[in-house]
Length: 311
Ligand code: OXD
Image (cartoon, rainbow, N blue to C red; front, side, top):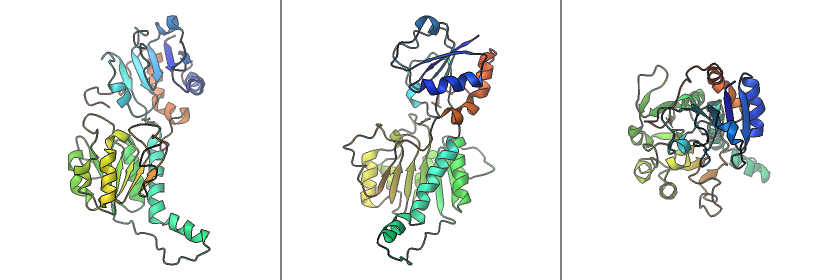
């Protein structure tokens, strides 16, 4: 039986789900801060984890596969993981969740839900509160893989014209897709910009003063990717200058968001607690089932991350 170690702060939730998904594996788990059974670990060839605790790789000399418990891998990419170890990600159902998140926040604005609630609280019949027309408005989604496309489809269902942005655009039958470096040229007309790109050296800090200067006061920025995609001081300045209407942020350079952050009480910012795409076994396991099977049967792991590009 091949051994799969689960080193995860929610290992108690993952263990039964992984064992049920692939009963042919010997699966044992520990909290990252707990002492694991080193003799057993030394023999394990698979690891299911979120973070690599210091010294873990040295204690797992036979390690051949790391399955990340979520979609983003930036926290693993900086680590000295030997090239022979396959690293895989799981984006599960994140696309659906993040599409709901994006649509929910956009419709809260467009349907004037806050103003309607305020009017109701005053028992005021606010007949002039007309919802905003979204049909034909421009939606830009930066990061147009599985997650971004799902968000794009949901926005298109609402009537928006959706454009995707990626590192290297290819001909696409469903959506116009452009190079990420061209994003600025579209911002001036856009109603919404959704960030769901992976954090890499190319995307870190991509939303900066230069990009935001090309925006417009009616633009909403939604970040469900990584906090470090956005330079927060530049974002705050752009909001104050009217280069951006609102920012809906689910992710932050430092999480939890520090109590002193000006984002908490900025009138044009919505802060949510990195909850747009929950990583639960029900969401993730269907995505990794094929590799669990392959691992149990000693076959090659599929869809290993390209270390060169960082995702
Ligand atoms: C992920 C996340 O990348 O939860 O999976 O942010």
